[in-house]
Amino acid sequence: MEVHAHTHTVPIAIGRKKWTHYLWEFLMLFLAVFCGFLAENKREHIVERQREKKYMVSLVNELMADTAQIRELLTDSTWIKGQDSLMNILYNTSPVSIDTRLVYYFYEEYTVYINSAILNNNTLTQLKNSGSMRLIRNKDVIDSLYLLNTIIVAVDKQFDLFLYHTYPQYSAMSARIINEKYLMNSKPGQLRQHLFSLSEKPELITYSPAALVEFANYIGRIKKTRTRYIDILRYYYNYCISLIPFIKKEYHLK
Image 1 (cartoon, rainbow, N blue to C red):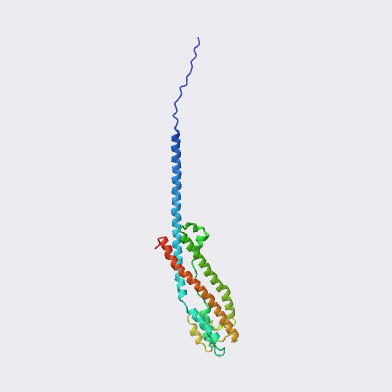
Image 2 (cartoon, rainbow, N blue to C red; image 1 turned 45 degrees about the vertical axis):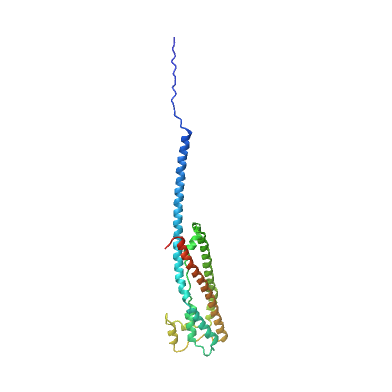
């Protein structure tokens, strides 16, 4: 009789994980990712606040430099008196008795070299062009900076009007009256002494009454254009004087 041996497989018990275990693993992974996101977001927030404050420090420094140089321009009224004196001579003195030494002096000293302010708007330009205005959280600060930019544009436009329109016309007119050869050998700070030490009075190119009046008219034009420029600079100066402490207070700057 044949005997067949039957092999019986004994099942190996494999422990199955409960669904709560998978849920816990998911939550742990989610929390790890979420915390990493929060940490990165916090880091970016801190970096942006640092950049914002850095911009404001730079802006305040530039505004302080602007007010320092503009203060000197606002307190200098000698150019007005000099131009008025020259116009008075040209309008009210007979060409026969005109003192040409004074004409040359007031012309060279008060109408040829015109001081202007070079505004430091590097920080404001960076804020606009790089899209960094978004870093500024305070709406009042943003509004103040946009107004600041508007004033700077007005200052530049007025100076451009003077430099590229009014002054070239005046320069062309003065070339018909003034003979530059009498000014060639004058040394800085010694113009009046040089002119009054000449053996003969310097000659004008023309003594035509109409030409001298026209010359005076052009001086009046450059005076008006420059006066307008100074007025806008004064507005910019006063605005900066109020803006600087405002920004310092908002950003706790010293």
